Image 1 (cartoon, rainbow, N blue to C red):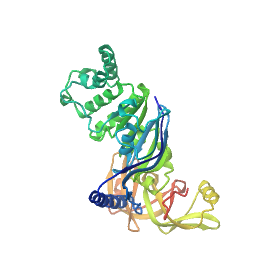
Image 2 (cartoon, helix red, strand yellow):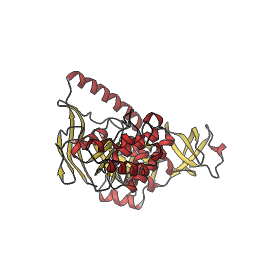
Image 3 (cartoon, one colour):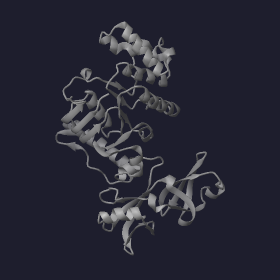
Image 4 (cartoon, helix red, strand yellow):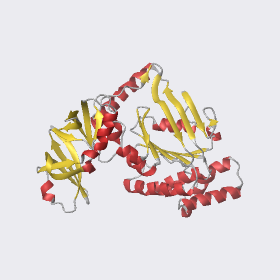
Length: 401
């Protein structure tokens, strides 16, 4: 195992003027799409006179044996960061340490790392056995050592019966196991995984997530995993690093990021269904106590929330209030809206409720619920615990509590 330290890492892709203009147009389209999803103000485009800035001000310390997940939307710089750790991309500025060695100029083959790619990258003319042992063969390892390590990895990944097959005779999940096996036979200090499950269907992704969790317990190495799927990030990582436009937005355990998102973007990106945002809300003082006005209704905040705001001498301001769909419940008193869409999910039902022209999603357990009362077109009353509300400054987008 080995620790990894990234200090003020920056990556700039130097491009021609024509490519610069094309990248700028593409970036604007991505921003427009992201803004429609998260309803957040546009961020600054990371396009400078030097070129396209893919990663900027990236600082991260990864401990020995830790499982770190880099997560974010397409184009946020997570794969570029992974490739810089691997040595497949040159670092423009900053320092990369693997263990206690400055590794900026160390060749990829000398970094004692292994990488699992999205597209498996298996040799089609080689058997599973030969694919897994190929890197050891290049190092002129003894045949006995190659045989022992390949068979050990195959047993760990439960692919022993496929060792004599060609990749074309395997399913997607089996091919991905072979790709992982090829990586772990080298006993790497660091295992890098670049969206390894994105080519699999939903059922196989779930199975492979479980396999990776089991694998982590069987081998002793440091994992750095890249994904755009926040479900993978939440289930796999000891800590997750949420990225946007080349910048780190938040680092924390899955629970920390879910319960205390640092800003509006993280709140909207982490969690399924996405957090509900009430724009046009206001933070104000009522009788000396803080309250947030949501859809024309004043909600007094909890004691803990009051203490945080008072400690920060928070002034009254415009805010975006957020509440997760799972924290909304049907109630006798509260907000009154109209059900527009009702999605039956088995043990729960997802209601899309129109409130003052905005769509509010509520996840409601079906046990004991009269489903006819939440059919499209029905009027419903819902509420939530003030302790579970999130308050974001409308200008800075930062979480105030």
